[in-house]
Image 1 (cartoon, rainbow, N blue to C red):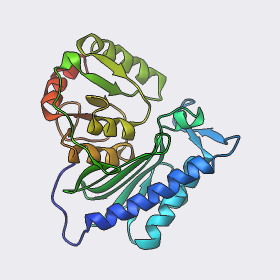
Image 2: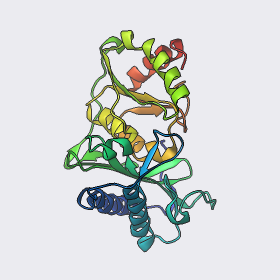
Image 3: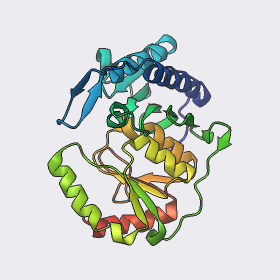
Image 4: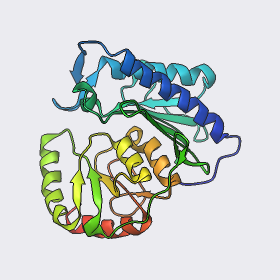
Length: 272
């Protein structure tokens, strides 16, 4: 998730676009939420999508393309054909999760966010995670640090694994979730405790702000972690795969570098 800024790319400019896009979507999903949501399912009966996911993604795409019409957008809901497209590797590409934590949103349970990130190739340039429930907006640009409002974020010194509060998430597919729970049972007695909040972008920002000591999950897509991972790395965390290699869809671990190295071994012992 790290790298140098490509020539011709202005991180503050991309961050400004991401901030405005995320703010517009956050306003929409809060003030525009209907009394009765129209809800569908996707990959499984528990993988929910609402009309507000689609409307928020369309609004984000509109804000981005109003200023940057040539950029690519990969949105989780693929509204208006903004999803899987190919282009020049130097093209700015946006990774959008209009409501990360849709199940929480459906239940009006705290723990959902709008996630918007701009990348060039494998390098994240700007990222915003807007948490409307708590009135927090996390933001980061490559080399510009990580922030929540006026507060610059720094990952605190890590505890030993036995004293670490660790966040995770589970698959929407029942068989995969059962296996994840079995593996987690081999981890639970070797850490302080486990939190399962239900929104990957916020979990990554929670590491950046010290609300949890670490976060790991299998099965994520890039729009789930692109913005939050940049916030975390700019705050001093490492974001890698569960095996300690490069972060990638389906394999994400985030923690202070010293703690991450210990957790790689712990997760391997548990069968991850």
